[in-house]
Length: 251
Image 1 (cartoon, rainbow, N blue to C red):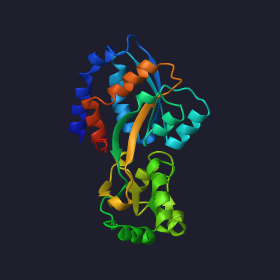
Image 2: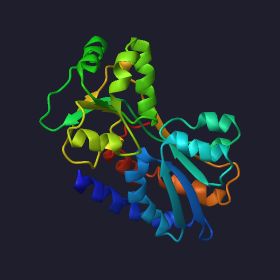
Image 3: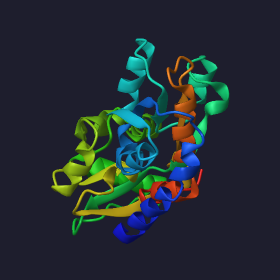
Image 4: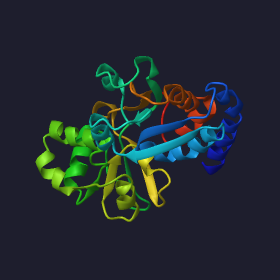
């Protein structure tokens, strides 16, 4: 994985000359970025900056980022672990700036060597949730909120919710890596890079949810052209390879 990731990043550097023609002068782009995309963004942003631009990124869970947006805090670009179309509908983003980076389903992972829960069917997964002592999710992250809604649909929220452990970005990965929970129910990107974790796969389609990672330019962006250039850069073939290396499927 490291070799492929390095090759992808090297490939991105070949596009810097092309990028420099998209914005006539250096600009500073302020980006709000979901914590689930932090690994990708921090790998690629320096390549964008090498063309003469600067990026200031703020990483957090989507609900926290949206509170800042609703409070009127200025930003140029936002990247979330769900479709930004509702933000366009609210007039918060430039309509034609919507950019898709990839999609990710919700799955299960355990500490390496730990017992593997059965989740090959909805009923098997339900039993595994009920039998578990502790479970990790992303909490207020996109996948965590989906898991909460799934528990409601399954009719087991009262029994399972007290067993869920979560926290700031990266907490669920650390919990399962240290063996403090039986398993984690999450998207794959937040788990990549944390040692001692075994990804078991996605939930069955009938109970899964594919989350679209997407972004857009703020309708009040100070640097709209540079913001568009950043989004374009993040969707070049070499950049998309980095997204894939970090757990996203083609959008």
